[in-house]
Length: 464
Image (cartoon, rainbow, N blue to C red; front, side):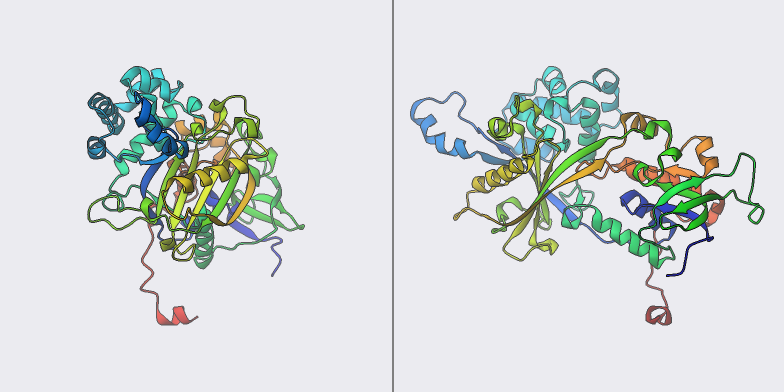
């Protein structure tokens, strides 16, 4: 490859994480791949029913309660009314809550008073919702924190998003999932599409230092712009108008003080291929809809007898476990099998044992004979840089950076938090940087994440 030394660039993006890749794609318009639809949400109950039962009736339930059961989480008002296990009083309480959570003008009113308080406390005191029915509502938040640490400010907006998204991708579908259990595939597609559009990707050329022009100075050969001098790994020195990256991809002395803090979250992942397709978990989510390619199963912390094995003093310290199950329709495993992706933020050396226990518990509760088994599994721990809370708070107030940051030409993207959902704030942040960089384009600038149809490419170009 030709040397990069002394070259000049309009935009220099450091790193190929999802935020950087989406920004690079937006700079060079192209197309994205279609993701698979998520269908049913299920929750595991270690003890299902039996309250008030004595004698023979209780004994008959004993073996079933030991293995637990899976219950489908209601997807809205109709599902709640149709669930005969919910009594009339509890149904009214749930309806009252769902009405508030679905109203975009109603739920924000409670946040000033209740925002920092536990969500389960809010459900119990304000709606008299029992702990048994609180668990499915907590599951819909996809919170990776223990239930007593999941706040109202975190839970309500996410339940609102869930309720208002149902049907967005077809009858009964409210979300999509990426293949291979993460967002790396999307980042790769974005990088490739950006390269097709004219972007240049260079490996092992991270930014070592940035020398910014003194205040008020301009480059004589580029009087229209102020170019920073960037030293790259390997000795090359380039000039760039805009330098963009996450805190981990930029030199520390270029970061705002709030983003110089080092917050590392450890996430333990487990991927397992299962000997059964687990068809019972993949019913069509609505009449007339197609079967889903993925489902979500939630294992609350009370699902496991793990305190002794993991050395945990209180079960309240254990976050719930989410199992994202993909069918063979995704192309990730052979027909007749399925694949499970699961992870936990529990900071324990034996956290992978917790994930294995979650999968074993699921397989023993699906009532298939013979009991499905794990054919192959892979476990690994990822160290994930997280955005400091102070930076998140300031970013919600304004999506743009300070005037001094804009003048310097250094734009800092938010870290991709280790949650199960790609939050809208990630795209808002990418859009803010894109709008700033392309501000001079005016009316010639296309809409954000709007891609031109490429079917009109000439035959000569396709053959090139």
